[in-house]
Image (cartoon, rainbow over all chains, first blue to last red; front, side, top):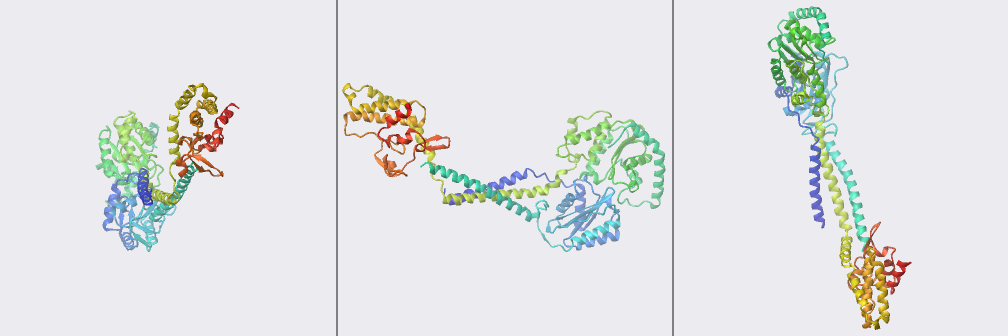
Amino acid sequence: MSRTAGIAVTVLLTVLAAWAGWVIATNDVPDALPVGDRVQAAAEALRDSNVYVAPDSADLLTGDELARIEAAASAASPETFVMVWESSSEGGFYLDTEGVRQVGAKLGRPGYYVSIGRDGLTGSVSSDDVGIDADYVSANNFAEGEEVTQQSVAARLTEIIAESDGREFSEGSTTGSAYWGGTGGTIAAGILMGVVAGATLSAIVVAAWFIVRSRNRSRP
Amino acid sequence: MHSLAPGRLARFDRVWVGQLVLVCMIVLSAAPAGAVEPVGPRTIDQLATALRSDPIVVEPAFGTGDAAGVHAVLTDLAAAVDVPVYVVMASIPAELRTAEDPAQQAATLLSTTLGEGLYYVQLTEGIGWVGGFGAARTLDVTPGHRAHTRAREIGPLEYNQPTTALEAELVLRAAADPGKEISDAQLREWIDTPRAFVPTEARDRVDQVARRWVFAIASALAVLIAGLTVVLVGGKYPLGPRRARRASDEKRRAVHVLDGTVLRRVQRRYDLLRAEDLGSPHSTAAAEALAAADLVAETGDELDTVGAWVLAQQADRELDRIRRTNQVAYRPCIVNPLHGEASATVPLSGSSIDAPACIRCSRERGHFLTTPTWRGERSYLATSTVWARTGFGALVDDLARQVIADRTS
């Protein structure tokens, strides 16, 4: 087999391997959750605003405080979007972070998404970047025993928005996978695993090659 | 989680008066606020007002993404129950935040305003409560609870967490048909809906989506590296022709031919010798070769079979030589006796003398006859047989004698 033919076969096998890897891994990907009513309502409200206050939390952000947070969120860089809603695992998504991502995906406005609200007797805060690649920031939750009131929500949000404001970021799709470490981490993991597996595979194939070769030659 | 035991309900009746006082206090304290827009968690009073116009309250936090859908299902099911049904799935009212059992308290307080009926209450804090007041007191909805517990076991997910919406649904179904157990088959049908379970698997979806890229990149890169390595190595160190295969094909063909007919033909030819020829040294040599061939012809060993054939050729040649004195003794090709008679020579490594070989092997040395050994196919010269020592007669003049000595010792 000529070198050109060998390279051609290699390229063909490479494409097949990529396809096979993709298909095998796809089997483990759960179906995307349908967008539920809460996400729908939040995404609609955030189309021309930066803060959405759900009816179940309407007492938590009103008047001047709401206007102040709205202004801060809209001026922040990356732009920040806030959902004030009751934390729940039965509202169409298990974790609030998932709800936050769904709202971001539905809305299509890249930025920093924050959800805040009551969680039974306590409070809950979740956040994630959607459609941007930026250094990770963690939104601080309510302090232990801190009451969820208009004052504490406004104070918490002011702090969260300020913490994210001024981050360097680039717009664009990100895998958003904290496990793999974003887009760069995902590619790096693929390359690292590929090189290790490729080296191992090469060693095995070359060893087999020379065994066959020596057998052929030992029997002239 | 929920109790419908009569004892429990009896306890209710006892605390009834106390609850009434509490309700009055709440109503009085809420009254000065007037008719404000309901913002945030509703008070018991506001819930009662809402329930009066619509006995099913499902807030989005319990809606499993479709609060209106859950509301519609529960409304339909409630219509099939004989007693009034009230369902509350809502944020915990502010006045119950410090209560010990808020759902139970809420149900009791609501019943004072709304009257008798079956109450299903689940708030965002505390365990849920279901029970009846008035005529509904004796309603047995425990099959609904049992089905809810069972749903955890037979659900479709790896970790099934049945929703409040499912529980309310099953309780109302049980209430429509009091005391009747719900079969697994029936339950399976009812839980085959997205609202039945908390969607736990969505938690790692982004990781799994990213994992596809990792898998695709890794497998492609691995195959690319291995493939290019083979192309590079293979270009420099070719595998060479698949000699083993060709050699064993040749042998198989030859062994098929060597089924003993040659030996029988030569034997017959010897038997028909005239008496005067029997004194010839050639006829003696032929007899010796045939005797040796007889010793090895039936052993089943591949090399022996080839040896028998060579000995038959030698005997045949000796019979020729009785008359044709110019003929030489038969010597096989050292490389492979099946190549036929040697008419040239070939240099052998490790030896100063050239060995007899067929004309083709003298030009380009062919492949040595091989035989299977425990180490795989090996050249017959590498074995410790009489054939290796004699080269099937290519290296010695007395093959027959050596074979007889080898086999009779």
